[in-house]
Amino acid sequence: MAEEKKAKKVYTLEEIKYNEANKAMAILACIPIVGLILMFVEKNDNFVRYMGAQFTLVGAVEIILLWIPFVNFIVGPLALVLIIVGMVKAAKGERFDVPLLSDLALKMMGAI
Image 1 (spheres, rainbow, N blue to C red):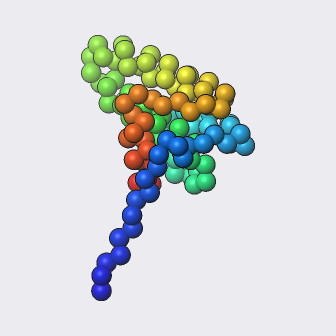
Image 2: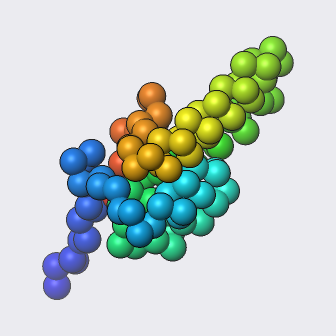
Image 3: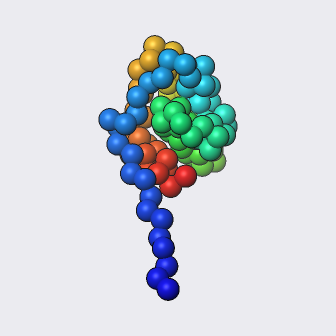
């Protein structure tokens, strides 16, 4: 018998639409740990999943780079600024694409 393979869903930025009903969850998804949880729990709202995936990656990159001396003085405040900007944009109903991480976040959404 042939093995059945499950294809991964490929998300595009056009599919990421803001949902006013999930405004609070979109704002909370900008906190890296909460974003990780919401990325797995929220199945219907792609905006919340996208924000959660991006800021999970921001948190992961921050944790990795904080161990490098002198880089940690730049990475920590930069991650905090990204998180605050993401929360403000989510509160306004706008999508915030984190530079260098947004494409990886879309792939991560498709894998989960």
